[in-house]
Length: 190
Image (tube, rainbow, N blue to C red):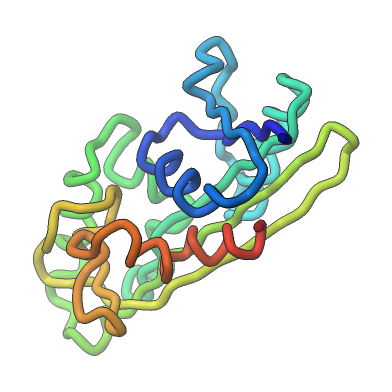
C-alpha cells in the first residue's frame, strides 16, 4: 500500500479526501501527523501555482508522494474574488463565518441572476522522483442571500448548487462529495 501525504491541516479537507479515495490502495497521512513541518506560503496568483508549490515542498521535506490542493470560491460579481485568497479573505485567522459574511456583505446589492459563482479545486501530486500531475475540478452555482445549513466547511452555507436545490451546507457529505469541485478533482486523481 502506497503512503501519500495530504498537504493540509484542515480536518474538513482530510475527511473529504479520505471519503473520496477510500477504495484506493493508499495509506493517507496529513500534515497533522507532521506538526514540525513548516507551512508553505501560498503566494501564487493561480490555484495551480499554489497547489504545485505545496506538493513539491511537502514531498521534498518528507520523501513521500504529496498531494496538495488549492481551492476556493470564485464569485463573478466580485471579479473572481475571493479566488486564491479564499482561505484568508476576511483576514489570516478569520472564521469560516467571517469569510462568508464578508462575501455576502460585498454582494448584498447584486441581483440574484448575477450572483453566479463556482468552487475551484486544483490538486497537485508531486512524487519524490520529480514527476508531477495536476487535477482540476469545478462546480457551478450561485451565492445565496443568507447562509443555509451547517454542514461542510468554508463557504458551503452560501454556495447554492442548483441541481440539488440546496446549498453545500445543507447537503450531506456523500451527496456533496459526488458533485463538489474537490470530488471532481479527486475522481481525476483516482
